[in-house]
Length: 93
Image (cartoon, rainbow, N blue to C red; front, top):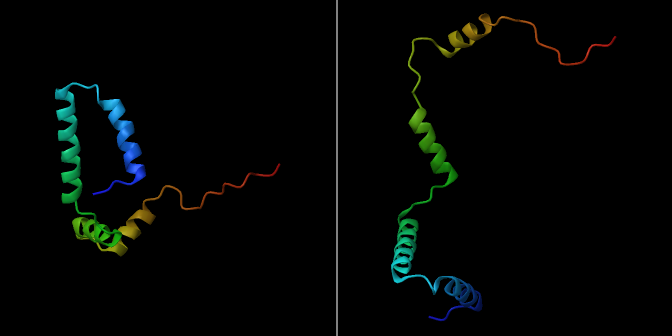
């Protein structure tokens, strides 16, 4: 297998940084690199649609209560302490 010039350059750069490390450290790095490659191959990437479906299935039906949506909305509106909308326009003097 032929490596491209880019990979050869990157490999040489890392080799110059790592070649003087102890054998124990090199073996540990090999282990960590191998584990990172195995993890990526096992990890399944989900599409946005799958992620959304999983999220919905996780929380769908999570609310427990006897009130209907209309009852909840009515309770929210009726429990407000201020019924008038707040104006953020500055007052003119």
